[in-house]
Image (tube, rainbow, N blue to C red; front, side, top):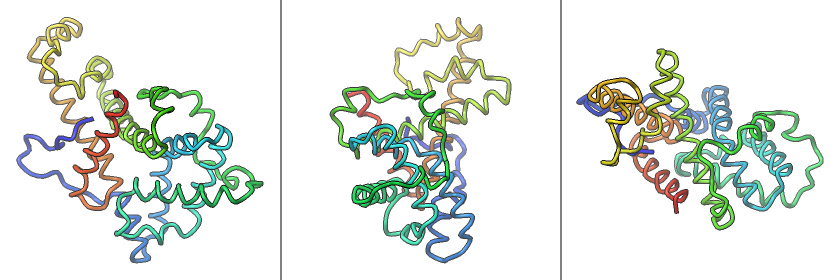
Length: 257
């Protein structure tokens, strides 16, 4: 993960379009475009369900109970009045979602969940989750045992951001017939150490060293741009993007401790 801007060499700031989170906040504050806001919220939930599930598991719930509670939490925020509480003074989507989840679990502990998982609404496939786990960026077992649930939430959130940006880059490369190039260079998207061997990459790809450097430079730029776009969807103010990226980078550092 890298906190550099995604508009290097352009000479002007990257255009900042309406984000899912700003749309949600606008609807909550003005009472307009509520359906669009709900759709945006649902999309964010589908994107970041793993941190929610991981947090619930870290609180000591079994896999089955964590699945039930995650689905119930989605239904709660998508069908109730959660949008009305998503005001501009409550912070970023990540922070507000975590606080809402903490409150939800407090209330859930006082109730008996006798209804069907998620109220009959399924937002994610648990079979797919179990088939995919562990993800490309897995949490070390020692971290799961030693980190607080809140830290695990932030770490898993950061992983989701990185994986979505990487997935989008892979899809772009594949659409251009360059999946082979992505597969060869993706391991070096955030690796800018001096020991990176362009000579070895050149031999592996059958390309001249200057061409390898150029391709990797462009791919890193695009990755950073996609990374910023992923983060921008969860903040209202463009000025918060860099701070959020720095925070998520610090969370990812936990993985290597």
